[in-house]
Image 1 (cartoon, rainbow, N blue to C red):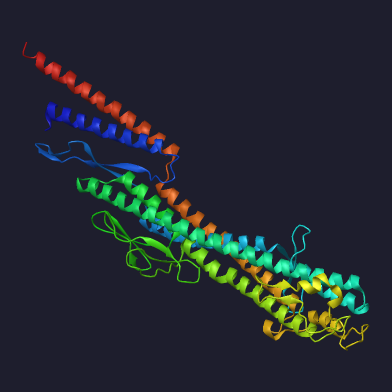
Image 2 (image 1 turned 120 degrees about the vertical axis):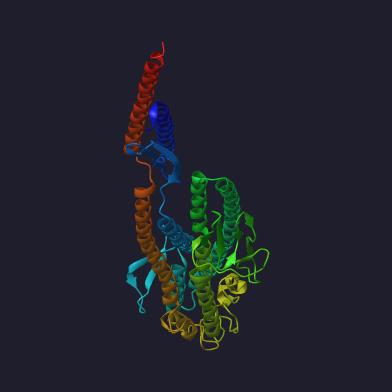
Length: 475
């Protein structure tokens, strides 16, 4: 049998066990508002059984370890979903920048002949769609009174408005591109900082667990950094037997245990559009998720396509208007002048000679026939002609479709983000059901350990009284 001293030892171990349980419950309560924390439990096991004359006899219980309640599968899924949501959110933000800098909104009730939604100015302002319409309306007005200097001046002012709008939109889209490049640089720094932190936490975890036990709080901190890293870049995480995690980006190893063996670098391949590679190895890194990937995809996809469409539209307008106008005759009989200069949206300009001398606008198709309107009428009809260089679209429809395409892409992203947010929230709720701290549960545990501690202390007191009785027998 245990005897009085054996029972006293049993009570002492019980006191230590219940005290440990109280401390763990208190630690959980202290971290109830910490989103990175996973609740912990003390693992209690029955002490070694002793043989006695009555048979095997228990010797109480011992607290053998403190475990954190984590579902590693859910943790991995949350990191993956963080990459997906990070990519979609970055694309959404990039397209919102582009749409705002267009200065256009989409009116889906008014559609062109190609089925593209019409673009209209924002807040009452005249956007590119309105200025294009204004130019061709001015040509039409001049065709009814080809000798009018006032109408000729109106044509050149509208042409100036068109050139200015092209220049401004092109400039603003260039600023969006610059902003996205800066975002790539900034997020590369964030990725490298997270990688360093994870390697440092690996070292601390290996040191603690090498001495015995689990580095629960350090593992929680590392999981939080992994999830933050996942928002920026799609990562592959592999845990080793030492307790460290190794991180790879697109197959390129970034950490090995406690060491950072590679870092991410943004570089210019020669076209001004920053891409990613290993800082030491120079290996190109193409991410499949995360905000870095989303930013690059939007920049080189929808934003670049919008800029290309804008340049093609400006080029087609310059070529066609100049081709028709240069063949006409001015009031003084001069010919061969162009209305527009430049080659694309950034460089389009207006002939200053015509702007200063509206009489030099070449509206007539016959030399010396100042009242003829053949050329200016042909210019007005350009708005209704399909342009081969624009894929068979009209000038207005081409621009409207570009704006509509951007709006549709943004709308699609909004829907995907809503769906992805639902999935991410569901995963987090599932994890909270396993790892989240419940105030009610912790308070219940605290009372249970408190009462068990009181009972163990009562056992110590009872054994002490029994020993006192035994000692008094010798008197």
